[in-house]
Length: 339
Image (cartoon, rainbow, N blue to C red; front, side, top):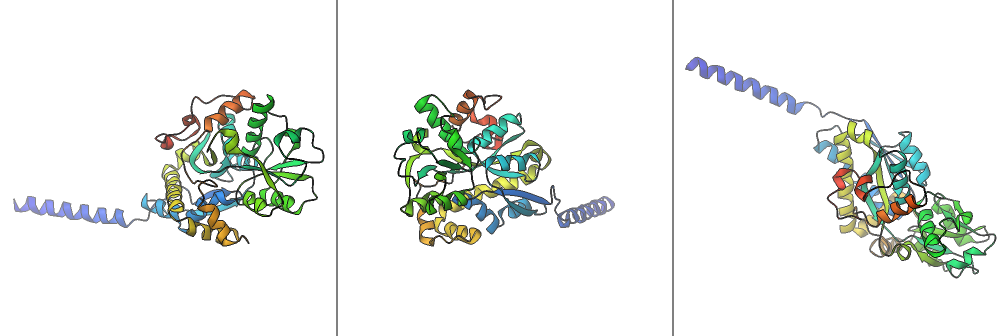
């Protein structure tokens, strides 16, 4: 009995040593670097929170991973972000809803939405006194409408949805649409004297243009879509998710935390936006935008996404039509009450 007890004691001691060794072992990494993309505008505040509070690193560590290095690429427009994902320059790209659905379809589902980021009314704004209503664009000359990416960006798609509703022709105004970064388009609107006299704008540029007194709103995407809709979403590849499941979970958990934090702390979020963008905007103006749910709502729930999908399929821009929004969202989003 004494010998058996001694053996059990030795075995228990050995097990304890092995457990301690495993516990003391360094965490393993799936990837050393996580590459994220960012476009321009107030919609990217959750990303600033993720970076400031090192939320990806925090969640990676909690999942037993060595915290990865985070690299940020500033890439404008859905087309360029799509190229960055396809070339594996970035692992997670923030893209408007139109570009999201097109990439899902054209990649045969190889890329899907990892998380929804924000809802916001896109505003078609002009400084041209000849444009008082949407019909005036039909006869205007020497006039261009700036969007981040012609034909691909969510602004371009919303405009096509609108012209299809009005005139049965989704490309009725496409000849006026040009690709231009939001900051450049903003400068054109407030300075005047350029061919770009309209801008389908996001925050803070829409707010600034209207505050300048030099421009006015013709229509908003909420007017066109019949209510609040998803605008910005974060995409990732199925291959990346399969090879790096814990890293994927660390990134999505980080953005979940960031969305909750921004909604609970809009004033502090405004300060982060100012810090990361070095904007010259009045801090009180930034705070006013971030505290106005009619201007921006940070929410992962899919809203009116199938309106975009059905339209894009109808005009022949999708090689296949999704049965529901769940087709182009990863399964960890499927418990959301989406549309």
